[in-house]
Image (tube, rainbow, N blue to C red; front, side, top):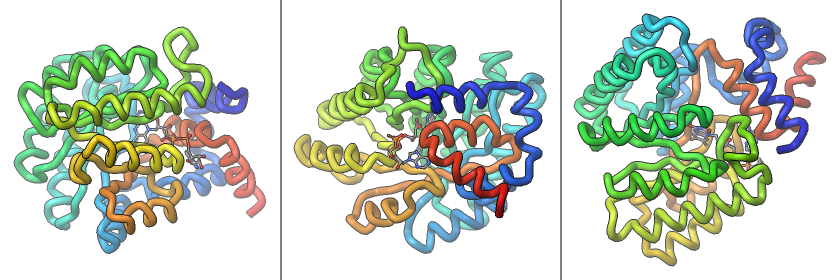
Length: 309
Ligand SMILES: Cc1cc2nc3c(=O)[nH]c(=O)nc-3n(C[C@H](O)[C@H](O)[C@H](O)COP(=O)(O)OP(=O)(O)OC[C@H]3O[C@@H](n4cnc5c(N)ncnc54)[C@H](O)[C@@H]3O)c2cc1C
């Protein structure tokens, strides 16, 4: 891991910075590059604009590691209300949730019952996939176990897996038999070299290896895969591999983040590939935003430029 990425990921977890940085005006301004606004309505307005270009969206309400279990109840209510707004506005939107936002650090059972409420409403009213984000490695096994349990009750659940972890190959093999919806990412957290590839080139190689592993099995297993990456080389490779393994265009999609490579997003769409853009919103954006900076430390210059503007 590069020094600058390491420092930014350290800063994402620093409690003093978590409290203070979000109050700095120039940072607030810079965040707008990656987030249309803090409120649900801001995110829905942005989703509507994407819909004009026939690009569907995934929404995530920012938040993680809640300390008080009752906060998770509020998050659950927020998502239930968001579903009503999505239906009212007739938008093609999926939701993506972090389990620690519902109380995963405190109670598996409470998190499960909250997630189940949201899953049932998504199935009934949106009829699309409800995604589980993948967080730091201390949650990976528990999240996979959670996924297997919830997937036995609802077929419309998807899970994110991270190519930087050595264990992800085994995790994918473990869930391939349950008709999974998989979102494959490189991984956004700071992980030790004992459990994650330290070199970016190895993460990239493993990304392609895991993608091929899923695609090879697609004729036999009922899987769907979201390639969540902005890496143009990898996307080109994936398109060739999908052709090679005869994976139909409906069985995979590209997923990218709001504000990152918008021209590339439109290009992929114009070539006829399925694409979804993930829009984040909410006022707890600091750790999430620092992870975005860590993905491309050159983004820090953009933040600094805002001091002078
Ligand atoms: C839809 C979606 C959902 C995700 N969910 C999760 C999750 O649940 N758990 C998790 O750990 N990670 C998640 N991630 C983040 C992911 O792990 C990566 O950190 C992130 O996607 C950057 O990696 P990359 O594959 O784009 O490749 P990289 O090799 O990092 O980047 C490829 C190119 O994309 C551009 N780029 C990438 N990131 C940025 C940025 N922040 N700013 C500007 N340009 C950039 C750069 O030009 C770069 O050269 C998600 C990503 C997406 C797109």
